[in-house]
Length: 216
Image 1 (cartoon, rainbow, N blue to C red):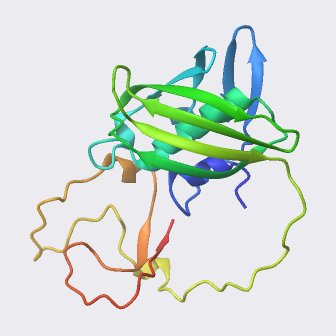
Image 2 (cartoon, rainbow, N blue to C red):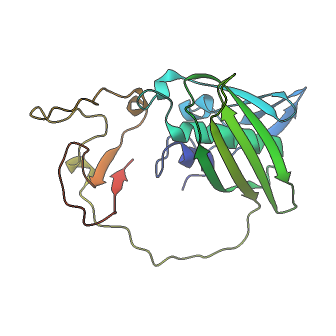
């Protein structure tokens, strides 16, 4: 199990960071998120610039393909909200996001508003954008303390091919396929992923199911 919920924001269903817990700490006049030393943690780290304003830097090495992958942007916003809330007893529970404008690689600003601060549950809002940009990513998140929940689920995972039998997301198209959009995406140099259910964008198929699955 992944102890850091922000890792799951980076890539849906993937764990690319470590098991570090996010803890906000006040040190001199700067609030930062203590998130460990993984590539993911460093890429999505933020520093407080002023009350309600956090800054970070999203590297082009996370482009997918021409701007940083959306999960990286969302994870950066989530870390800024966690830092503003500054309550290690409350973890990220849910998050809704609107990608109103592209966020390009480089410096980013995150404006955070703690909408409600509760004893066991709190809500925050954030807008992340490049400096000077009119729009970017807007998010609303709920943080909450741990409590007892369901200990079982009757949902079964789909049957998929073994990971060794699946292509990789970073693989080029087959030699006999002309696909103009293909170019190695920097994002996939940080993660190994393999589609297990679904279709490649150059394939022709008749839609019969919305089910998709991938190995990460």
